[in-house]
Image 1 (cartoon, one colour):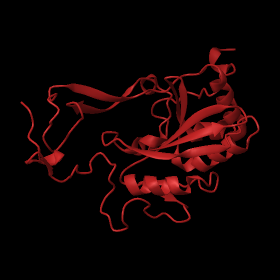
Image 2 (cartoon, rainbow, N blue to C red; image 1 turned 180 degrees about the horizontal axis):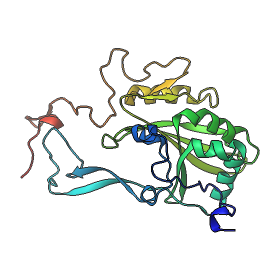
Image 3 (spheres, rainbow, N blue to C red; image 1 turned 45 degrees about the vertical axis):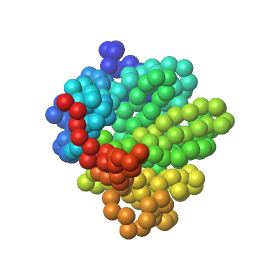
Length: 258
């Protein structure tokens, strides 16, 4: 029996031969499986210049010459170590191997924490099994927060869920991506009711639309507020500040250092 025929480690997926996958995977980056060596390497999604990555206005930090890449951790091959493998095995048992392969895009173990990147179409199924399965029992979701990566083409918006198992004293993270052109993610309020206000806040600040939410309205900004203030491409704005008789212009109007 060849090594390919033997049992696979928890969370390990079958390799896909290039050219045999569905053509839709090229159009939707969120549907690609981390089965190639390149997917396990850090992913460079942007290039940042200056101390704060200021764009469209003057860099007042004095570090305009600083250039660094913005990278995302690559997928982690199993075994993950400790109870991480127990969670991965429990989730695979709850979902079934085939559904697990279709639901989990990649698993990242980074800085002592584990993150499951979940395809948005499978988010509800994964959340329900994480909550209900006796081997998992992640009963509590402390909320969802949004992240905007303008350079992550086709998956610019990320929703991050922090789950706690009070039964097993374990914490994991789920991360779901969606493109800016189609910012829809299923609501998990039916599974974790406390996410009601958290999803409204994420919608307000990042523009992610949570399908199935009972009342998706703004929670911080006025109803007629244009745009979503915590996106990276949102203008800095600001008002002049008077200090000791002098007027300091807002951040987007200050001169840059050379």
